[in-house]
Length: 273
Length: 273
Image (cartoon, rainbow over all chains, first blue to last red; front, side, top):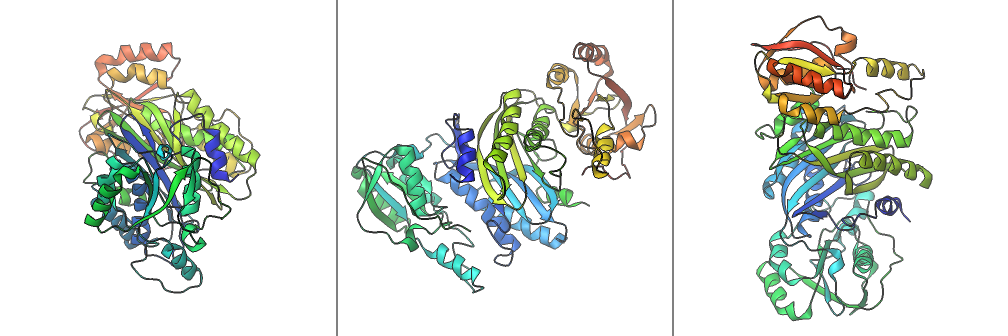
C-alpha cells in the first residue's frame, strides 16, 4: 500500500473522498500539490510554466467532475534566492491559468523555503457532478486524445534532451468545452494523471466492475502519467451523440473496452515523476 | 516589501484578499502552509502535535472571521523515511483537531518529499463575517490572554532548552466559544500569528485608523508571533457586555489602545520562526 492510499484510508469513513474532488452541496473542492523535485525540476520549465501547470492539474480535477471552477487558493513556498522578477513570472503563470478558466484567486499563503513547492485548492460549482463510481456493466470505456507523449517527454527530460514547447508534460491541454457537452451522456469520468492502467484500477474499485479490452494496450500508452486526457464511460446508446460532439470539438476518441463483471488490477507501476 | 506582500499585491484587484480568510457568499476560505524548517523543526514537536498545530492555525483564521469551520483539505508532503506508525501519528493529529472543531477532512493530496510540508485549506460558513477593515475611530482595541510566551518558548527551543508541554507554541489554544459570543459586539478582528505590532499595522492599513496606546507595550509582548490570541476592536458602549462574556469564559482582556485618526506603523521585525 502506498502512502497516499494509507492516508486516504485513515479518513475513509468519509464518503466524499475517492474522486478527483470532493462534492458537497453543489460545490466541488479539490487540492493538489505541485512540488519541485517531486512533480518538476526547475531546469525543465520556466517559472511561468510551473505556476501555470500547478493550476491546470487542479482545474482538471474540477472539470472531470463536471464542475465549473470558480476560486483558487494558493500555498506557495518560494526559495529565498528568487528575485522580484522571478515572483512576477510565477504570478503571471497563476494569473494566465486563472484568466483562461475564469477563476478568481482569492487568497492563500506565501512562505520562504528551500525549493518551490506549490499547493492549489480549487473551489468549483456543479449542478450534476460526475463520479468515478458510475460505470455500469456494458458501458463503453473511452479516453480522449493520444496517450504516451508525456511519458516519452519525461524520459527525454531525464536524459537532458529537449522536448517540444507544446509538450503536454509542460502545458497540459484540458478539453473542458468538449467535456461539459458530453457530460449529460456519460456515466463516470476522471482525468489521467497517473497513467491509464492505474486510473482504470481506481475506476474498477469505485464502480465495482472489470474491463474487457478490445485490443491490447501497450505499456507506453497505459503507464504514461500526467496526460490530463479524460477517461470516461457511457451507455452504448449515447455513442453517436458523443461521437458527434467529439467531431465538433476535434477530439480524438479511443473507445477501448467494455465494462464487465469482475475487477481490474494492474501490475504496472504508474509512470509519474 | 516582503515576498508575501508582493504576491498579495499581484492579486490585489481582488477585494476578498486581505483578511484571515476570503469571504464569498456566506463561506470563508482560508489556506495556510505549515512547513518543516519554516514553521517548525521536527525535534521540537511530535508528528501528532505538528499535524494538530497545522490544522489549528488554519482553523484560527476561520474563527476570527466569525465563521464555523466545516471542511478541511490537506496537502501533505511526507519524507520517504516515515514509517506507517509515523503516518498514523500524523493522521491522529489531523483527526484530533478535526474532531475538536467538528470538521470533516474531505480530501487533498499526499506526496513523497524530503521534509514534512503541510498545507491546509479550511472551508467555513458564516452569516455575519467580521473583517479587519471595520475599526472605527474611538473604538477600543483589545487582545485576549497573555502575549510573549510563544516568543520566549521559541527562543528556548533554538537554544535546545525544554519548554512546557502546554506551551502555546506547541499547542495553540483557540477561544472560539468566547469569540462567537462577543462577535455581535465587535467591529473588527484577526488572530495574532505574526506578533501584535505587525497585526496592528495590518489592522491600521485595512481600517485606515491609527492607535493611541494607553501604556507602552514592550517588544517582548508586541513582537511575539504564533500566539493565536484574538485582536479585536469594539465600540465603547459594548465594553460591559464584552467584559461579562470574557468573565464567563475566563478570558483575560487587555484593552490597550483607542483607534484615532492616522496610521500605525511598526519598525519591529515580526518574530515568527
